[in-house]
Amino acid sequence: MSVVLETTRGPVVLCPEQAGDAEFLYGLFRSHMVPDLAGLGLDEAALERLVRMQFLAQTNGYRAQFPGARFDIVHFADVPVGRLIVDASTEAACVVDFALLPDRQGGGLGTAILARVLDGFTVVRCKVLWNNTVSLRMCQRLGFVQVGGELPFLQLEWRRVDPA
Image 1 (cartoon, rainbow, N blue to C red):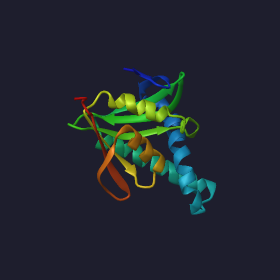
Image 2: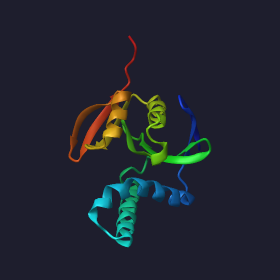
Image 3: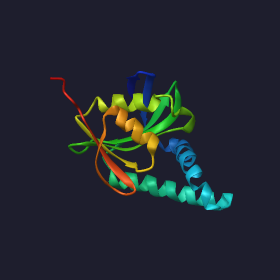
Image 4: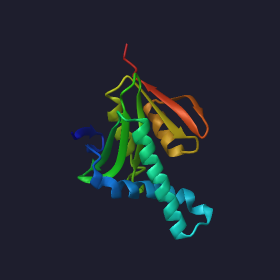
């Protein structure tokens, strides 16, 4: 079932992933991985094989590790712009993955979406790569604090603050 989030940037619709979303999900993953791997000096075919292998490993890993999670495609203005995976099957919800297409980043959309997602929980945790400064800043703006981690990841936690 789709969920509409009224955000400060406008309505966002979270639609459960379907088999037909595989191409979009691969393109989203690729858009983030290719810049990171460009320095390896691989030819295009080898780079494509590596990215495809990592995509399949991530996809299968998330499905195995978080079987109760909600896997959504993020739609903004009726266009798919990202992915959000949230596992609410434990005491503290876990943002497993949240990614937007590069051309949708930096304008506050990600912060607006995550802020609305947080509304539904008391405690939320996530892991962020230690050098992902953009995601770390977004999480800080929303009130996440570092509670641990094992490199290369930092463990962050957000807790609802009830006004006294």
